[in-house]
Amino acid sequence: MVSVKTEVASDTYLVGIGVSPGISIGAITLLGHRSMVEDRPIEAADVEAEIERFNWALSQARKQLQEIKETVSRQPHLREHLYILDTHLLILDDEMLVGETERAIREQISCESALTKVLQHLRQMFENIEDEYLRDRQSDVDAVGGRLMRILTGEHERSITDIEQNTLIVAHDLSPTDTMQLDREKVLGFITDKGGRTAHTAILARSLEIPAVVGLETITSLVYDRLPAIIDGGTGVVILNPSKETFTEYLTRKQTYEYLEKELDSFRDLPAITTDKFKVALRGNLELSSEFPLARKHAVEGVGLYRTEFLYLGRSEPPGEEEQVATYRQILEEMQPHPVTIRTLDIGGDKVVSGLTLPREENPAMGLRGVRFSLREGDLFKVQLRAILRASAYGEVRIMFPMISGIVELRTCKRLLCQVQSGLQEEGIDFDPKVKIGMMIETPSAVLLAPFFAEEVDFFSVGTNDLIQYCLAVDRGNEHVAYLYNPMHPAILRALKTVCAAADQAGIEVCVCGEMAAEPLYTIVLLGLGLRELSMNPASIPRVKRVLRQVSRQDGQALLEELLALRTSKEITTCLEQRMRTLLPDIFENALI
Ligand code: PEP
Ligand code: MG
Image (cartoon, rainbow, N blue to C red; front, top):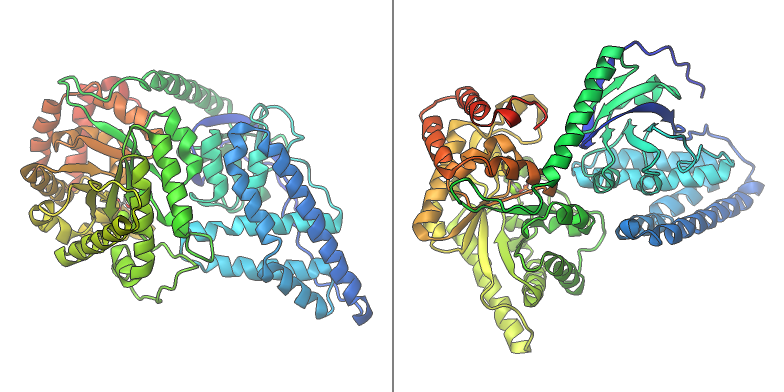
């Protein structure tokens, strides 16, 4: 298919999903479109030969992947991503791909046509998956399909390793394998039609610190080689054919961003302490071990939220006890001497795990999610609790239950935990008997009952992402009501105040681990609430720490009182922004915080 590209107008602005921050200015290199092949019938007598050709392509693909694996394993910073290549090798053996393609060939179409059909079918299946993480796994199947197709057609796409200096790569989709091989010296960033925040490619871009914008849908049909472009991986903005003025503006932004990044590096080893000596622990939210380097880089003080559901996603069987113990132990050893808060499985709602059977629900956000699911699947839950407890022998573990909405639920979780502890004791297996037990505060009922809950747990962790959704009745993933989703809603400030007061009264710890904790504008509010622990994506830590070190707890308390007297989100936000501009003009006058 030949597509005719017209000249791109100067300053063509596009907005996609910014998945890896940073500004890059360069010239585009367009990597090949996905191969599509029309149906080509074959004779019945040729079927076996065609199947043989398909098997040959499979073995060639295996060989190529093994070779890439060997190259990658020689590069220490990429070694932890080897699992992606293993995933691709597994896909090459998958019945859905291999068996279905063979079946299609038996219907007398060519190997390429059969593969195209199967890939299209798989793509449709993936598109209907609600869970974003699983949906993003489509890119792995596409990558394997693309490799097989290239082998079969003998078509060699321009090699990703063979590109010019100062390149911005544009591709329909970039496979994780391609991303791993990007030459950081030459590639300044990438832009793709497809993609989502949690795709392996996005995760890799962040860990390799390559600015990236994904999900632009039609970028490959708009651009051509050597077209100048700018990408802002933080905001998701892409500017094609920038004018001289835009170029100058973004060059300044880029320099400011880089200066700021360097300056932020200087906060790495400084304590997170206010001007009136109020110490706040800044911990990391982690999902995968590939995030360790970033966590290390930003000196996280332990993990405030380990989302264990990521261990269960994208596989047909849930992880067994030994595998979980090994994973938790690795995190604990990595985070020594800091604590790691392991949240028990939080699936359901928008997170669907293929290996676990969940009923189809009318209203999944209010359905069988979080501990509700774990309590229904008691055996699965006990395996996880055993694994967490066993891991507690290797470092400071805290166990946390998600989506608690009533006291009985919490007590049932604790009772199960006690049973598991007794079992381990009887078996003479080591664990920390004083492991701290906590709960997420994510539902309005948990807020209202906070004083009761505080008497039954060692700590609270406020999941503002869900708390805002449930308190304001605003679906956190629905763009049509996104304008109502606001952490500065007066009801949310009151909810936070209630929770902090209850924790304070009972003398237990309280942390905020929702996205709100990562936003420097809100740091002073959280300080005013008395929070001594915030957990966030590690890359946000320097910005939050910078604010924290320049304000006092007293500033926070005074401002909070002022904000609590206001009645709308808009009034609160305006007042907060004004105060921050006065207090820290260097940071808040500048949009690039
Ligand atoms: C939250 O709800 O704020 C939270 C941290 O949990 P998750 O984003 O995993 O639902
Ligand atoms: Mg949540």
